[in-house]
Image 1: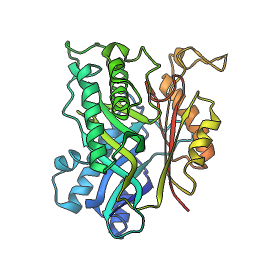
Image 2: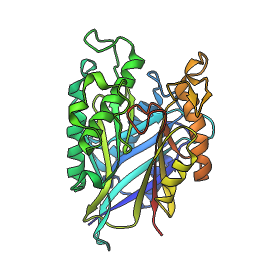
Image 3: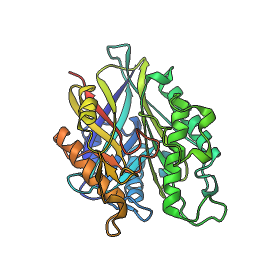
Length: 346
């Protein structure tokens, strides 16, 4: 049966894969077993954040040297989900998810599945076509993992595309807005596949407007370094070895310490990785008190968000290697978000 393994590795710069190279040299990870990579780079997290593409290129070249496959072929089957911006206490790092076939005890464990949607051109971003494509990709990733029921899914992580050049056929000429639309469409599509969002309400008009539509099990990033929706699904399935658990909990708002603690409590044991999503409350206030994140012309609101949320989650984790991503449209309660903790159970 497959056994999932998670390694949380540091990086000295966005092209530093020495920690992974060391694991492979020691035989602790086989390049052919790597199924997905999720990480934080120290860029700005925006359209011109090329640290993400630099990391991906370096990763695929390293894996190509080990497997003999072409880098392009590896990139087409191994999702590389990167979020830029390590403000405050956050530390650049990446999570390597591998699955090896070996005899192991247990009949039901944490499973991982992956899938890629067809290429998504700028004209399809934030439209029904992207919503449907992500929903289909999530279902395909569930099948890849052997996850039989949507309720057995713990988390869906997606890297959605952002436009690399203006397109007059796109929903907007504002590239930053299209990044948000892409996250929104991917979140709603994943929510439909999980049954958390009614398919009849998953319309283009609902994106970024009907914030009552959300899933507590979906985390989305977007960037110019991908051209399609890259999907990683985690959940429980028969035939996977026991030993790793995923605890997921929503955050009602940016100060929801209890929500963060709930995710950690749901995954007791040695923490292997943490993923968190959040956003500045659009009302301009948190628990009745005004915040200035949305009106600051010097620092982007998402950089404020990552610094603040990162400090809260890292304080609970006792470790700055936390994947914190802003732009939580339709991902957890409006103005809040979600936290997922991977741990090796005791």
